[in-house]
Amino acid sequence: MDLMILGSFSQTHKFPTALHLPKLRISLDSRRKKWHLLDRDSSLRFQRHLVEKSIVTFEKGSILRQTYNRRCLIVTSSGQPLESGPEVYGSKNLWNSIGTFLDAFYRFSRPHTVIGTALSIVSVSLLAVEKLSDLSPVFFTGMLEAIIAALFMNIYIVGLNQLSDIEIDKINKPYLPLASGEFSSQTGIFIVTSFAILSFWLWSYVGSRPLFWALFVSFVLGTAYSINLPMLRWKRSAVIAAMCILAVRAIIVQIAFFLHIQMHVFGKPAIFSRPVIFATAFMSFFSVVIALFKDIPDMEGDKIFGIRSFTVRLGQKRVFWICISLLQMAYAVAILVGASSSFIWSKVVTVVGHALLAAILWRSAKSTDLSSKAAITTFYMFIWKLFYAEYLLIPLVR
Image 1 (cartoon, rainbow, N blue to C red):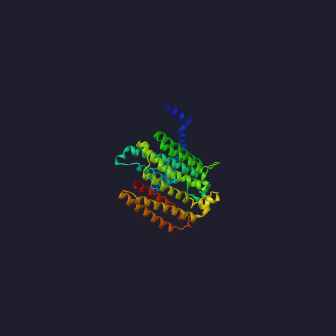
Image 2 (image 1 turned 45 degrees about the vertical axis):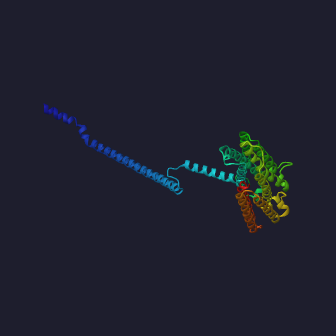
Image 3 (image 1 turned 135 degrees about the vertical axis):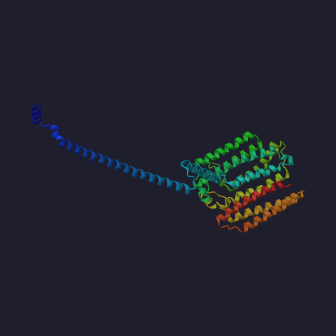
């Protein structure tokens, strides 16, 4: 019975699941292969992505390294440390700008006049010294106040002259900062205005009446000499121009600054000693020579712009030898003054010193090529050196 049922059941049910197992296996194998292929493909893509990324990273790193190396090479070759960046270059540019400005300001201040002013005040101040105890801190403070105030006024005067002569200086003195364009007119105006104010401000602090008159007269004459206004610009007249320079360099500097030390610093009465009178007389000659000689190298520009200087009227050669003759006369008088001194040391120094300067002047004048503007300009600077040397001798005149 059981066998019959089993046989019947076996015949009736054919076990479809068992019969379809091979097909299922094949299907599973096929899907497994597809999954394997997909996995392999994804793996390959991922590896390819990593490779590409590493190549790009390598290339970027290479570029960055090249850039860094190039930067290091540039920095190293410029002498800067490897850590330097924009700050260092900015600092370097700042210092270069400051250096350029100071160089231009040095030329703008006309240093030979600055040296002459400072040296003359020191020399004249020493004429008021009668004994060693006078060389006190009060004396040196008073002298320093006078020097600084006078230098401020000196820069105002020479600066105003350059502002008024920009076009002339483009021919005569193209190296000056206003003529060359290194300074604008606004910069020049700011400088001269500031220094004039500083000069009078310092006087108001010091409170010396002789110092005030020294500054005020220099301011008025310096302004009238240069500024181009009706009834002014006195430099167009050779005689008036020479008188302006004579008044400042020979009279104001000698007398006013001597009185500043004598009256304001020492509190003594205004008594003019023999050395002060000698210094005023000698520097009158020297100031006229400077007034005449300064126009010799500038004849070309003065002629074009209608400045009727003695050089334009008489010619370079005649004015040159007039200046030499005046200086030789001044040295002759100085030798006579020295010879009449009651002090042996003063007599020897004054006579020998002035005789030596006269001989050097004559020798240099004979060897100067008057057809060369450069040679004449060099000789003009030599005249200023003689001017400095004289102020070294004046305190020794007794």
